[in-house]
Length: 357
Image (cartoon, rainbow, N blue to C red; front, side, top):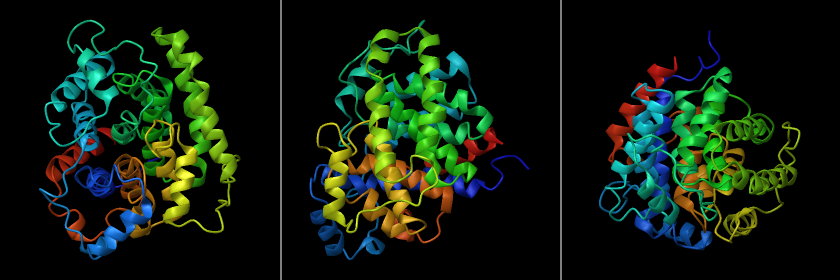
């Protein structure tokens, strides 16, 4: 029995499929992603008859750039390529994915980064250092890396692939360490590692590996290391806040933590007042939602998707991990039956499962 034997192909399929569901619901064709009020979004959910009544399909529930680029990463990984050949394949898929962005609202760093990619040429997966590339665009497309490299003894490969694919668009460590976090959390979900340990694992296990790799790779080392500490500092503060600095819990929650209180908390996690908008706080809010929701799908969506801030990205990350943990139990069929790109998400999940076992 290997380390990941308790995660079945059904869990892999659920993880990829629900990442798209979380994206579509958090996005709502841009209406909810750019709504700054969680309570207002919750009111709109109630007006639609509640989550159990929402039929996620076109044209009202497009997936955003998050799912298009998560699929790009996943389909590149599913080729079975490795090392530089894999990185060129990912770069190729990102360039291709950017042709499918009508109404999907990709971020500025993603647009800029992909415009510099030259897959197939020497070093063509590297882009110039960008001190502004701190957004969540790398974090929201990296969970599938954890599905491809889910085993504890694959940590260094997971981190290296997450760093290199993340900095194709987000070379700032606040951006690409978000990619490491999302990939790592997905691998922890596959491993059935207690959720209370995930944040500590990021800081004590993955971030040191990432720092060593950045130094050895020899690309933008000085700039990267000078900007390194913001990400780790914010995560240390979060773990202190939730009582998870030792990885054991119990989780410390505010006495009241409804939609309005969560908006304030998520804003406090953020860099610029947009909760989930950066590489550090998108996976942080996803983890916060997973810790609070347990196996309750509606509660997960309340926390991860229906909040003021970058709600599609936080939900994409959280829902992928949730599906890996719990499968499709409790998810209404109308939430996923007609999801855009459903078959692609399911097909690539099966391929990643086969490659990982």
